Length: 182
Image (cartoon, rainbow, N blue to C red; front, side, top):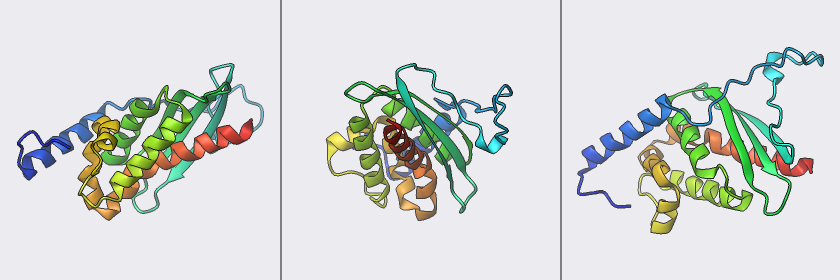
């Protein structure tokens, strides 16, 4: 990744600003409220988002990080036709700026992608989080993550990695649930 002739402190400051901005203006965040017309008696904790695309299969996953209390519900709708494509990706949750920014950037990265492309991005993000601050050696992998490459700095802190990965784990699980429903 190119550092634009910035020293380590300047680069870290830029990364922090990108993460804070993404967490303050999250993409894909929706409030999942209980459908009051639902007579099933589901509690608010069991509320789900109904599929908005007729030819899509929905999947949903709730993730919780017990270390810090961050939590998210990720809702994905996958097209039924081949290639399977992510037609809708939304989430609701609360947590630190790292988890919220990661979710926002994840939505930008995978919306409209095929399931295979989304899973490749998830794998690349996982690899970045295992880099312990060194980043990705493959420039094309780093480029594929777009702004999410700023989480390279987060990968130095083991306690923060779970925050950055929370939404990605939810994405993978919700896609798996959507594919099983077929």
